[in-house]
Image 1 (cartoon, rainbow, N blue to C red):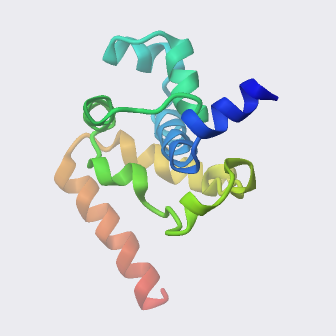
Image 2 (image 1 turned 90 degrees about the vertical axis):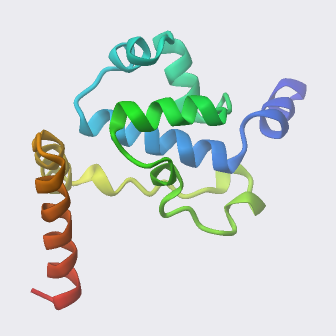
Length: 135
């Protein structure tokens, strides 16, 4: 009980869980194992596991390293985070894994296989335009 309370208060906050889930999603989309990601930034796979579950908080410089490995802006780790997230117990946060469908995972994997950043950007803009135009 004491250990659980310590985890919730000290390092198992809802924001940490959200950021960890984003890291896990990005890692999986790139087909990376935890070991591979850890080696890319000088960590063990166990530390990656702790970050992905939110058990350990991620400092700003480490978050920046993740953004470089994944080639995304740091803000990406906070996308879709509900503003009220910090008001809830982390166990109350609903699992929102939009990549559960095989189609979404496939599209995301294809996107990250496009080597040219400008082409990826155009692809993303096309997808956004299709959604907003109701195509």
